[in-house]
Length: 88
Image (cartoon, rainbow, N blue to C red; front, side, top):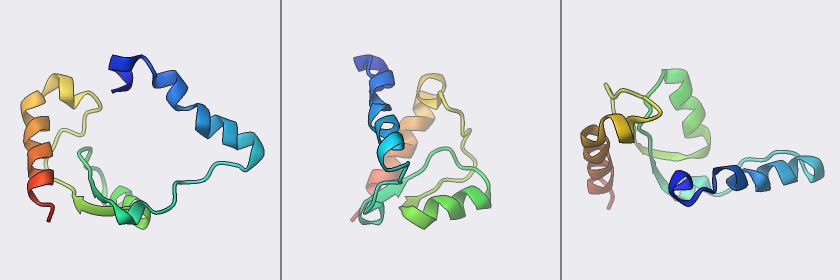
């Protein structure tokens, strides 16, 4: 979305603005929202992600590439469908 709306730079302003005042802090209440991950990664990455998120979808064997939506849209769409199909 940031690319289409040309707002990638301004999207980070709130984080940097807080650095001087209160320091960086992760958002609170993330465990209230089911989260799907596409990047995969090591078991350490998963444990760190699960500390602050309700990870309900972490597929194995995906490319983990940052630009997967452009390079492999078929895999990306299939993964999004799988994530949403698993929600109650």
